[in-house]
Length: 472
Image 1 (cartoon, one colour):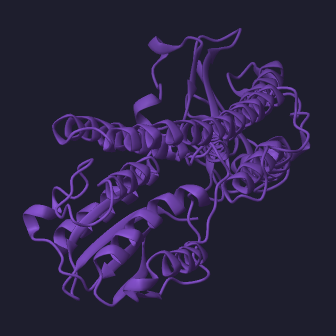
Image 2 (cartoon, rainbow, N blue to C red; image 1 turned 180 degrees about the horizontal axis):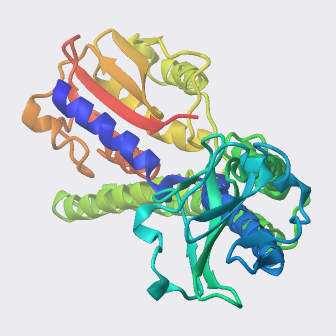
């Protein structure tokens, strides 16, 4: 049992977490937050990449400018020595250890920027050229897997070209590089700033989304509260002003409620009129039949009794409202039991039966009061007929339902007879007045409210009738 209960609880929790059980708000929040999270993840990857690409492209343009500046100032003298006729225009290449370096090599001669001071930068072995046979314009870029190290040990963004100057066929190797760390720090700062802005935008969007949803769904919340008031019996119709998209639904619901209530009242009224209209002719027929001979009288009286049984049963059914989900119904079972006790104490005065009402005064049922009178009244009347001294009525909550137990201390019935008690017209003692319809009517009326009636032997020796009905 414990394992089964745990499994049922886990299944219930799982069903609650499935998307189909989410409210409209939860679905809107979930999809929006999922979309924002996806955009945030894309932005977190794309923005640093784009910024880094832009800054590296800008660095490339700077290196190309420095390379062109060097190329314009490089020449061979009459002695075959390489000279730089002018300085590079960017002053950062003159400042020691500035992170901006250039190097020119031809044969065994090396020219360096002042920023290298007493250090040097060289090409990696696998990409160096030392033979005249490879003297052609070539360009090499270096990344983290194949770095060039600067004067302070920093990794450089470097451009390396192999060229041939006019006047000599010897290849000239030119390297221009700048420190990569400032670029990475700039990417980090820009990405952090943009990330902060994105977080602020997302939080702002969430706040606006929350306000928008609360304002948009307020009419639905108002409609829900109005329907709750309707179910609790505090109102007979849905009231309030609603948007034009919801108003047709409210109008149709109110029209349905009015039609149902009007139809119910007219049905009950006609049932009462029919009952009174049939009683007099049947009474006259019984009196006339009593004057006939026994052989003729017996079958006529039997037919009249059957006719009375059918009429009473169907009139009782017509008086039952049912349909708890349409009408705003509510009843107090304790008050109903008290009023029934006062009535039956007078009807069965000669039997001297005591009814003990143990139903909580605060208990409320989602059942029409007239229908509850019909259900409980038939069961209590049966107890008054068969009890020896006492009828006891108690109630207990079972989830969203209430079980009302009516017990008597009469002779009771056996288990087999308990299964036949609710059969229409079934009577186990013909000497007791009645039509045999009371318990059957109570059972059908309870089922119209999605309830049930069960019969068993009472601990007091008599019959126990358990009526389960929805509570408020």
